[in-house]
Image: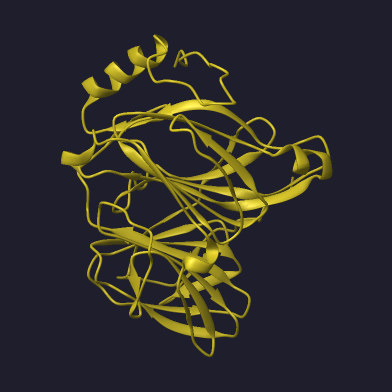
Length: 302
């Protein structure tokens, strides 16, 4: 497995645009590891984004792959977006869906869902390189207990905004007049920006909370240099001018400010009592099973 090397961010003097810079810790998931950006001690959440993982790039030889066993969620939506490789999603609603680069898997847990994420048999035989992002988005307070749902959006459904120096995929929300078909409940912005040449751009400030995570290269936000593998959380309501060199890639995420969330294992909710109910329900195997992938893992002890 190989990972992008994160350098220390460098800010020259005072910066009234960047609130904080997060350098994530590496989280070992067994056969591979991820960079866990959110939640962080420096920022628990940004808009509806309460969890943000950067996977890879990780190279799996033949016989190796990801092996995320069936596990439950409540109170959130998961969004999986890949740059390279493939993940096979299965869930307790009966969906089986391979996700490939540029597509979006949107799974809304609501009052409860179970899913697994594996490598297909074909890719186990051949090996692959996996690289992408997985985020959790909190559901609005009054919609945390809605029915679970799953929607897959192929890559060719997502709008792309091209300029002379950038190519931007609108993953969620509206950017430069283009609106993604991905339907989420809180106000959200999620765009994937690739610099095809040296670029200078202004990040939209219409959403209440924003952050920029650098995938490749580095960006300069008004004198604050953000390297690959770091997230800059921006001050609300201020203009953010970004400079990016050719071949740099970053995502802009954010949305409406949400009330604080409690996270325990894979459960997200405003109410600790609701999380306790979910823990007991999982222990009693009351969440249902994933057709074709019915392995049960016990509730963690911590």
